[in-house]
Amino acid sequence: MLPSVITFNALPAPKSPTRWHFDLRYLPLEPKPYHILLISRVDETSGHIEKLPIGCPADRDGLEFFPDTPADAAPTVARALVELFSTKATLGKERPSRLMTPDTGLAAEVGKELRRIGVSARELHNVAKSTPTAISTSNRLFEPVWQQMLREAKFHGVFATVLSMPEYINMSNIKLRAPERLMTEGPDAGQLTREQKEFLGILEYIKKWFEARPPSDKIDYCSVDIMAMNARRALAEYFPENPAEEVKDDADEGEAWAALDYALRLMTKPKNERNRQMIHKYLMTAIHPSDEDSTEDFLADIASTAHAILVHWCARAAENEIRSRYLFAACHHAEQALILAKKVSPADRYASPLVLVFLRDGFAPHLVPGSEHAVPALVVYKQCRIAYKMRNDQMRKEKRKMDAKREKEPNRYRCANAGCGILAEAGKMLKQCAGKCDIDQKPHYCSKECQRADWKNHKEFCKPGMPRSSTDMDAIDGPDIVGAGDFTIPITGANGQTTYISSSTMSPEELREFRDVAMLRDLPGGTLPSFEKYYV
Image (cartoon, rainbow, N blue to C red; front, side):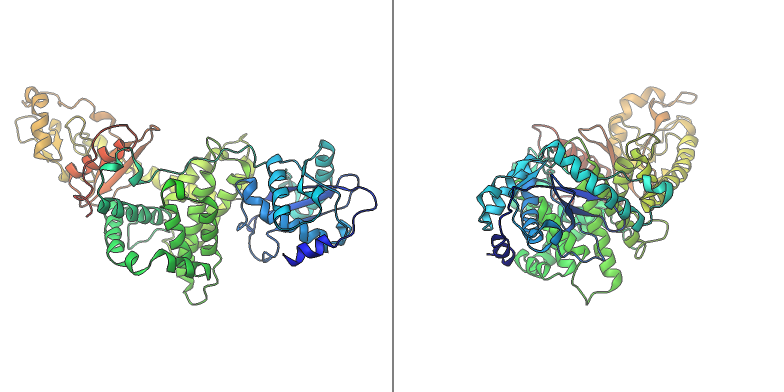
């Protein structure tokens, strides 16, 4: 039995019945946000506010405690209640007669946890739902404390109104999103061989790692070819030499890389084996390691990567919504990912793809005047705002350049064969028709096969003075930034969004087949082409 439980059980019972309210709140105070446990006596003004988890160093955030559900929160909350009632004079140093909280799920789980850890007072095993009076009393207690916290966080004058007082968290009515499907979990995954599944599992690991890494001038982490090369190397060398059990042991000892490595392994387990809280635990270990031997840049790279993954972890937690607590936490992790990435990345390109996606889809909508969190987005999360503006400026500049090239010669940068979809970084990468059609009307093709397939369409136009045969070239779209020598193909997902995949080594035929594979993952039936021709 815990020493604090022994002390708690020895507390005297109150002379008259006492009812105590408690709740959880998230304080988005940058750069060190955290949760608090607020305890208040219903019929008086006494109470206590405690940062969670208890014992968290004052010089860092408290986000190692970030529960999704009442069951996640209950162990920490129950132990905190026992310890605080045993040690804090403001709580009277006597056993409460009754506990209550507004979250009914948390009430049930905390009651079970108090019983499990050995609290002897049976009346505390049944935590009640807080009354409106209890909630309003706790809010009155917290209001002046919150204003003081804002002042200490340098929010003065009009800026003190930027963040409204946090309300209690209700975790019982949140619907968590189903785990994301891996490459090996599509409807036709049964057709993959064991070797293909093993490789694709490691490719998924590399993909999740590289999408979160701070950018580099030396390596294009977004390149499919680079990912595949690293996956082959990891399959042959790294994973056989570093079994998961050994990596976990090193991670539990606080080693930064091992913690990130093990988190990625947990993220690429089958859907029914993934545990969000365990993934979160090891990502936070990667951010706050006890690793004293690694270089500052190495630790910054790892911490930035872990923060970027946690951006996604927060932003994609719930089904069809992002609650304020998760939005603020995602913004915090994005801020820290950007700050750390500046230490190791080019000055004009330091946001990882995962962070950029969040800035576009999760952060930018709140920059619109009148949106719910517009003011905090503008005032509190400065690095997010700067990175978002920088990326938009870069994309507009690149788009103007590409649009000018495409407008000048619309035929030249996309294969003219209907349905092919291949785009080229440079016009010379596509072969033009050698017939008698005018030079400015000539169609271009990525391969002889596409040229032969399009001949029936182009034949009547392959004469001097005829218009071009491809009728949809005026509205060419494509990625704003591509690498030198890249072929690109658009992939439209089930949600209607288009992603562009670029490669400097895959042939147009392989890119088209890769597109078909990706689209088959979202459709019933069909036959999966072999992945071996791409990677193995």
